[in-house]
Image (cartoon, rainbow, N blue to C red):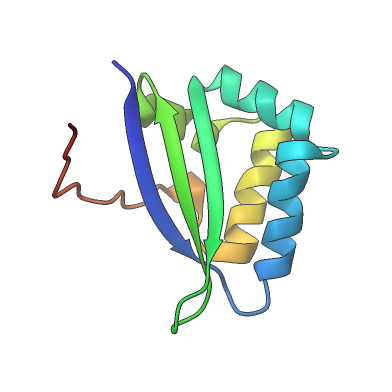
Amino acid sequence: MRQTLCFTLPLLPGTTDLDRDEMMACWRGERASQHRESRARHGITREATWIQPTPAGDVAVVLLESEDLAASLSGIAASNEPFDAWFRAHVKAVHGVDLGAGMHLPEQILDYSA
């Protein structure tokens, strides 16, 4: 059964444009094939990111889907593949989050479906 997760990560001051450029490169640019290979390797079937301005600063809104989100996230956190190592360094540089050390995932408190 597919699992879906949405969460936000704050963008550190001055890093919004860098994050936008790098995520666009992962989506449609020079990193796209490496990104697709990484996500297939880790069982991620969907990933989407938005930048949301807030009064406290910009945040990235992230959506992930996988059959086993815990395994997918653990795989990215521990992988020695060059793209995955680059991705972890990018997340740390723009969000201040060390994926290798793990992260606190959001608590789901509502799930409505018609």
